[in-house]
Length: 222
Image (cartoon, rainbow, N blue to C red; front, top):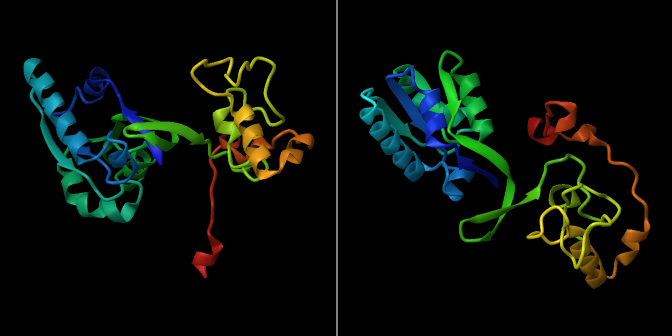
């Protein structure tokens, strides 16, 4: 899922300092699951904003809503009239949701309340770790299902660097070197020969380095 955390309250207050009436829009998708952008998060943030503005002598009216998904226009249409009634929208969806609002309602200023982090996997309750960088050229088949692009600090493709010691990453001592884990995994699978093949330099044009990407599911368009 896409994981994010809330921006500091001071930063959010600065974004909306010129507005008297806003919509605080959550999302019922990923950010609800990671506790940062669902209806409860929206309710808490609205309360904090109102309290801070009241203390500053500059009260604000907030309309709260949480569509099923903020990243799809069809779920935004039901709130069109409410959006028209406010001066700006504070979105606590991921960056895709913020941009969907900006496209759907270009006449309204939509500002982000979250910092979108990564695509993560829940390792325990309320804890997520980055597992996929969305690079567009998946290598999981030959690395035993473990991603060196998102989990190696140097994004190495042909084994660990010389700085890892005792299976620990030299960049972050709290992180296991993914290439040692890949070795252990391939050994279990009986596929250590995968590591004997020198991989060519990665074509980063499939990643965000080449600008905005687009995917078309042609089968669904028939």
